[in-house]
Amino acid sequence: MSRPALTAMETALAKRAGGLSRERAKFFEAFAQSGVPHRRMEAWKWTDLRAVLRDDLAGAADNDVIAPSVFANVGPFEITVMNGVAAWGAAPIGVALARADAPLSALAADHPLANLAAAFADDALSIGISGAIAQPILIRRIAGAGITQQRAVVTLAPGAEATIIESFDGAGAFFSNSVTEYRLGEGAMLARVIAQNAGDAGIETAFSTVTLAKGAVIDQTALAFGGKAARLETRIAHDGAGAHASLKSAIATTGARHADVTSLVRHDAAGCETRQLHRSAVKDRSRGVFQGKFFVARSAQKTDALMRASALLLSDQAEANHKPELEIYADDVKCAHGSTAGALDPNAIFYMRQRGLSEHEARALLIEAFLGEVFDGVIHAGLEHILRGRVTRWLEGA
Image (cartoon, rainbow, N blue to C red; front, side):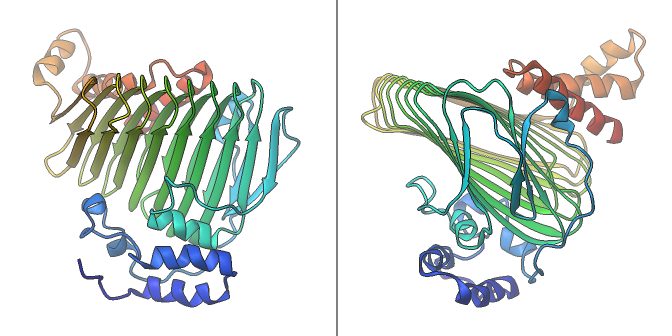
């Protein structure tokens, strides 16, 4: 595949790369091999980032004083990342923070946007967690107009337990790009909640990797309202036997917004389990994208993996693109996937209207129930309440 001509954005990035250190320049060189992802790349055919990032953007502008996070009600330890620069207060016992660059993991090393973030991130965070941390940890990323790059590496020691919330918000026309790498030791347990809203003009890409040692558990729940273009991408590697991954995600979009949830789950060890559930509700001219792939290596016998993806099309011009995949080399496995898309059931609406609800109320209740399955079983009850509340507010506006 021939490489398209450089855009104004890519040309400006190349000029800025001239001032990078030798180690960071290597990351930029890896990014430059493909440049900004575009529709001629199979994994990006529905999210053409180059098309919306052709023009150069100035450095990130300072934001005004911001309101408290909607997650403040659960009393988290907050790490605020404003335009790529992190700040925090006294950390809970068992949580250690530092600013340090590090090589990208094998899961992230071939990703162009991971390399872009590693090259230009002003603040590369290292977060170490040991023991059972009762207080949720909130990584709050906020972007102002311009370009923001951010990177974090989170390591859970063997047997550690933590709840981490990652929120992505911004105002105006911006491009926010981040890479977060999670490394879970033997028997570690992580509950991860992601909430994304880039507004109508923002462009958001958040790439993450999760490496699971023997018996480690990741429970991830994501809610995306999209933006001019937004992509939440997760790669998970079952490196140790008996590891477990639960991936749940919801997209809710209106107007001309675009939201993309993409994942790759590698099963490289025996006896691992993955459960994945995705729901999209798209309205007006908006688009929801889901791409999920399970890879099962020959060594991953006794794998048990199930993927389900469903979309509600709430208008004639709304669009949902789904691509579930299985790539299996082991012969003693249970793997399945399913994908559906359709409109609200008119019979269900009629049934509810016969019981006193207006058409608007009936539609809203059905959509809320459809998306709400994603939030069933969120480990922290307060977080489940907040996520459901955000969906309710979206329905009120939609």
